[in-house]
Amino acid sequence: MSAAPDHTPTITRAPLRERLKPWLPVLLVPTLVLLGFLAIPSPTSWLTLTVSGLAMGMMIFVIASGMTLVFGLMDVLNFGHGAFISFGAFVGTSVLLALGSLTGAPSLLLNLLAVALAVLAAMAVTGVMGWGFERVIVRPVYGLHLQQILVTMGGLIIAEQLIYVLWGGQEIVISRPETLKGAITFLGAALEKYRLVAVAVGLVLFLALRAVLRHTKLGLIVRAGVENPEMVQALGYNITRVFVGVFIAGSALAGLGGVMWALYQEVITAHMGNEIMILVFIVVIIGGLGSVEGCFIGALTVGLVQNYAAFLEPKLALVSNIALMVAILMWRPMGMVPVVKAK
Amino acid sequence: MSDPILTLSGVKTDIAQYHILHGVDLQVPRGGVTMLLGRNGAGKTTTLRTIMGLWKPHAGEIILDGARIDGRSPAQIARAGLGFVPEDMGIFSDLTVEENLRLAALSGAPTARRLEWIFAAFPALRTFFHSPAGTLSGGQKQMLSVARAMIEERSIYLIDEPSKGLAPAIVATLAKALKDLKARGASILMVEQNFSLARALGDHAAVMDDGRIVWAGSMAELAQDTALQERLMGLRMEHA
Image 1 (cartoon, rainbow over the protein chains, first blue to last red):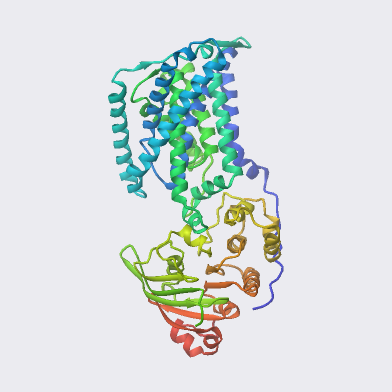
Image 2 (cartoon, rainbow over the protein chains, first blue to last red; image 1 turned 30 degrees about the horizontal axis):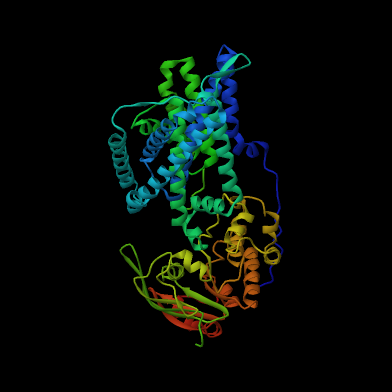
């Protein structure tokens, strides 16, 4: 064997078009906002709709982020994810109704305390539910997509029936805490206070999730596991334990999303989770299965399109997000931020 | 053989309905490079993956440093002291070179000294340290895969065809790094189809055929006996 020659790498700068390519999805949201500004005649209506769309997108992101990681990490299609949204909403609402003295007080601090307690209770219950769901329902069908769809749909139906047993069949009306009611006026536009809070919560959650995934060892394991779980195990990490942790966290986030959605709609039903799942699936698919960043961009896009379309052409609102999904998949068949999977 | 680091006794592995390993008996000496050779489909990769716990044997025993490991999970086996370089390299394309190496360091992060040693062996990894591993060339990915296994001391390194599909210059770089690893007293079990590389690196050899070890001995003995090579592996040295 001859001596090793120097294998000095050379670095060439890619053309601008190639360098911009990964960033194009990031530009989608501002582009959409700009298009909305041009299409909507009144700037105040545009501002109201934009905040509303962002708030809706953030709530969908909270719900969808766990689901995309669960799919990416273990290739599990969990159609039962909606159960955690509904359960989170019912548990959170029950806590808020029980804390009427706090939610009715004209104090932001007391109101936020009540919401925080409701969110904690909802996340704890849905987290435990997620643990049980993974052990009993999902674990026996790893790698079997058809069975996953059937069995998780079954889990969803059981969970909905359990809600009827525990809370009755009637929808429950919940009003927002006192200081989160109403709107503030900004540049002549009425912006609902709750929607601004939802935007802030979603943004904080996205940044926190991103920081965990980018800057911690656990995040490295999850990101590597999404791409090649077998190799992660061969490096010494128990990927099953990581997956259970992600499943629990994803379920708890769906519970948080359920509370946020309940306060957004101000009415809850047993099948509310199932109803929102169509948007969640669209977000997970167009974002790129397993990508939190893609999920975030996808959720904001879906929220904005839904709100702009409902204002500009109400009849198109129902199909706007399906059309959006088709358009994005034609542009990027693997989603906006595709995750590389080991073959 | 006195005090082998790794011993396989009667290991049988099935993949789906196929019987791949029919009772592998192999002893890997402590220190030095043991080459696992054989024709395509002989069961070499299956043997490494079975040792790693990625495929479960249905019979036999695998003993690492006196402790039985065949019933353990891949993660437990890796933590028992096995470094693994798979045939497909197993690089995480979305992670940077630095993140790939950090992930492999079970103690938390690689030491500066170890990193310098790796950079000396593979200068390209220093250059592309903060680049996504998916942007590396095939050869650089193989370097990263080997570097990842070498990021910490391991009891034994399992390396599956590191030269596969690579240009001679890159194979030479890898060979130099593996020689350096061997000089530090490491134990290596390596699958290799490139016989000249196997001969240059190997101290011991085991030849597989049809899911069994059919010959084991010193690499020098195998390298000198062209008739034996032809009989065991269908190799003719003038073409190798």
